[in-house]
Image (cartoon, rainbow, N blue to C red; front, top):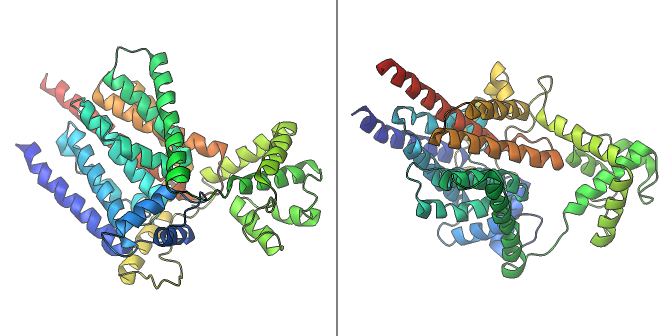
Length: 436
């Protein structure tokens, strides 16, 4: 009888979470990237500088609801679906209330209403994982996860490293008799179809313009290697300018520094250079200087992780940037209260939860705890969620442009959810021992 009581409570709490996000964030917080993608949704001139599928989805949503809030509605629908699906998966219903409740935590609700691809990716994967690891092992239900997985991979290219583990554990869950090697091969092959499908959609269907945005990062890395080695690898960049800009800790700051020095307004030091030439110069530089290149990657990743001695970095986005479209917050007073709530959490010992390093450690710890569990649905869920989180972290070890806290939004949700699952499983095991 107790289990039946919690279903309406879960629904009520989920509705409350959605209402809080809506009233505090509507029509959706928007950064420069959000504005660019919204403008793309309006004029339908797609580029690959931002995920074309997100702008296209936004464009379709505008037929139903006018204004930027149309995408916020989609994100909230994904969040609601993900919460309710996972609550139905949880074998121990008395713990189900913790799933919607966790989205009220300041380090999770802080970005829940921001119109970013990171948020859309996280909510899509929340739905997808709930559909993959059900109690019934229903292939038809699992197949419904495919469009959500595809959307997550299409809005964030590095999401592929978070998706491979999810596919692997799904294959092991549905086909336990298959060997690990077979599951790994199938996971890699199936995952490889995702970027191919994204490419077809972006360039062949939506006819997105190729901007070769990767050359921005390549030019930045060549400039830093040039400074570290003392070699003049970029003759068109003044040595004094490189010496002033390249020591800055993140790519964005370095790019803006070069812009202020009079270089390309987009911050690229390879501007005006054919992308094939830029790729060749970058490849030659990296191959000739592997240790400085690895040092650059390591330092950037450590800065991104934010040690206990550093402050949280970009853990709150301040509303809607000034724009010519007249888009403003619906409830600025409530948005201010939400900001105060989130920022208050950062100045307490709980402020460590606003730093990626802690979530990396928690994902590792939850993986260890999951490995020690007996074979069960909960073990599969915990291992899948945290392997996905660790895979996503690995993607940022390869390439991290900044230290923004939003980059690990999926990792925070995945590890938090796995913690609830572990606590529920542990409580159930203790209850079973007590009865015996």
